Length: 215
Image (cartoon, rainbow, N blue to C red; front, top):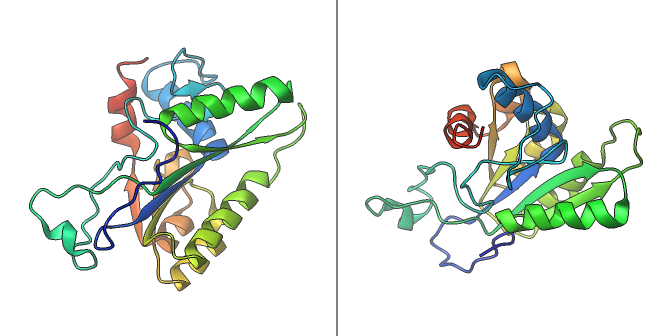
């Protein structure tokens, strides 16, 4: 099954969503993998989980599937069951920016991202144009709207960018739990963002485990 989740479940189960800042994740993740596997920093591999400069994810990890089992049994009774697992995400979004032939690159990138299990948000920019805040703005609008509409109890934000701190604080004020999933400070994690979030999940070890087969 592909696409960005959207599963129905009992109200006693944890409802969570995932938002991935692909620009930030691809940039820092490529550097992380290059260093640990002695690859060129301009990572260029053939994998359904990688599109150079546009998309990077964890092999054998669906976009909607959890990378950790949140211990939140006090909030969700179903989590008290022995060996209970975090349910799949209601929806998982992956945001990235592409350039080149808009009519070809955008649909191709959307297809790759969707097949992993994400709802793709692929933005286009003219080649050579400086980095914009388009991804930041899109994530902020979508996450805050979902929080206001009470679509989730917990949200993962995959980024190390401190620019998201106001968004994190706004979502927390709505009573939601915010988890930052990213690498450590050596690969772009803002300590201020980490502290602003309720929890932090270091995905470094998992990234290495999943990619050691593909590189």
